Length: 385
Image (tube, rainbow, N blue to C red; front, side, top):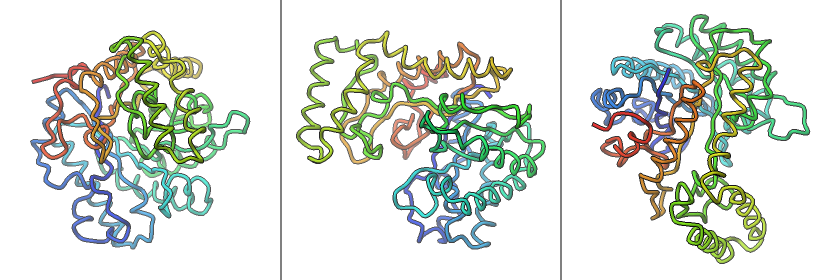
């Protein structure tokens, strides 16, 4: 793996009551609808050699019949074959997400022992199906961004759970590369808390995700639960608009929070915003924040004799446009950020995969035609023709 692209999890996010509809199951993952082999070949032609393909565990586990699971696995294998024919290697990513409304989401899977057991069993079943694919071009990532072990005062719980996931996946797919992460949202901080010795598997690639500096990469995101819903117009790098103009923009955002945030959360959101922008007012500070997780992952690899090609930046990106909002991040701001991130990865010998093909963080000009943004490709150091 060298240069990768994360594909879409869902495109319309159908509700669970629709998950047994033929139109949903026959186009799984959902981005396949209307996509030709030529569209996928465009990803390869742009210079990406692999894709990370998120598939949602909830549809496999929430009130799922045997017919549904069998169909989903068959469609997953069909999609892997399509991507291989387009010249792309594939990481099949069992991509759980946090949610306030789902019966099966990251929080429930981690907190509910019985549900975690079912999840591990499904990892084994999907792994057995993937064992029939080519191990030279197919890898398996059994869990995405575990929301656990972020509190440094508590004993880490994720390493023991990771051992169970690894065993289930390895027993099911003995020849395939597995992609494993630490806790705390698959962060470099979470990776530091994992001792790879008990896993003792040379056919594992260790992954971490980074969106630092978060206040610049998640502008306008309504789903974060913090002040980011009120943030827009901060350039990358901040020096681009000059210190005075940058400070004026920060002041305008604070005014927006004071005017529009719920009264009971206003003070909390202002404090959070001020903490996030405290150390990123110029390019030097931005680069320090950006490089910190890379330094952690690099040090962890050296301490555990993990070569850099087996440490993978699985997700990074900068928002394009939050759904239903007018503000759209200029492509040149995003390209500048992506350039700095990919250079940080390449400096250390880490492969990477950008988030994502479409959606709020999409690197296409739009989600219908799926034409890759040439400015973004240039920022990633890839082809622009």
